[in-house]
Image 1 (tube, rainbow, N blue to C red):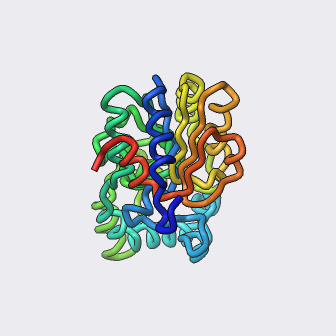
Image 2: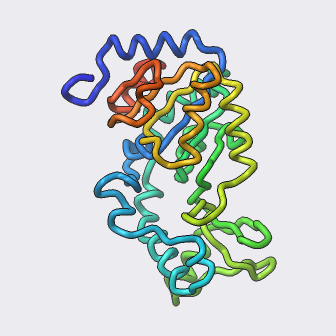
Image 3: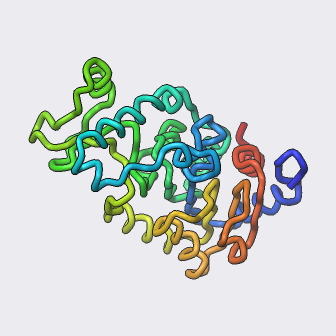
Length: 256
């Protein structure tokens, strides 16, 4: 890595060669890819969770004041999330998905930027859900945020399902909430079918999600870790690039 945080040409060339030689790539993405689009990190020092402790799912269900606080935080950050757009890293992945070189994106992110870059919904496996809409915790009906926000900001009204009266929550996975079984199973299938796993922008500390890159390596796939900082899995990787994510992958894939 050069002093300005960018990968050197030899590192980019090695990444490009691994991509060219692969026949089925699976991407594993974390917050680092989206911070380059202006979305704050959660776990890192100074991140959102160092300023506000995350609200446990059980508290969200049991306590109305916790639901109120959860929605307050959501809408306080809404302009930041709404103004974010896909960067070179997202566009590079979209190109590899579109050409068939990559089969899927397993993501810890909830911002929907992979889909916004043009990746079809069915190619994105959202392990931690999606913050761009809400769902009923009882019947699963989708609820759009605009109407919820209108009523909440007008008089603090909490959302309940128009279909069954159940509690409505953003479609994300909170602390204390079960991981989505279908997505976990899909992620495992895609991981085991891949011959190259590329990690981008994840510290690989959030388990069980972070176990997929190691599973890929143990199954014989190549492993690339592209992250600004070192991770605990670096020692298992075939290539580690501690560099800016969007510019590095964008150069390797020839995407502006």
